[in-house]
Amino acid sequence: MISTVSLGQDTQDTTIKLPKPVAREIAKDLIRYDSTTTEMGIIKKNYDLEKNNSITKDSIINLKNQQLDLWKKREDGWNSIDSLRKVEIDVFKSDNKKLAKDLKKVKRQKNTMANRT
Image (cartoon, rainbow, N blue to C red; front, side, top):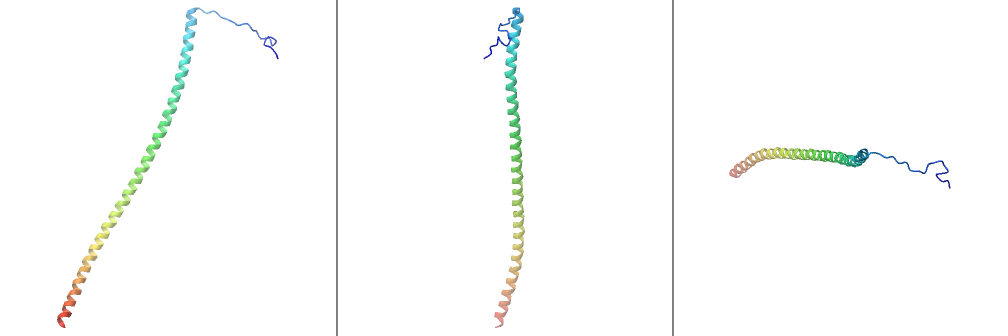
């Protein structure tokens, strides 16, 4: 095993003496950096959550629009059926009038034939 001394590295600690006001400012800057880094991480997470929320909202809106379109088509279908039923009723009424006239003619003919005999 090779020790660090044999590689030519200095094993002594280097110390620098700073005036107290400068040391305090450095400490404050380090603390600000740590809190800023933490805050930036939180901001990134919030941004990602907002992005996901936006995608989810868009998806919900699209699904609701599709549902509304389907309901509109369903309503149009029911309206078509209703229109066809109304036409069918009108046809039945006119056929009924024709059949009633034909029935009266047949009854008259029976009565006239019964009176002749």
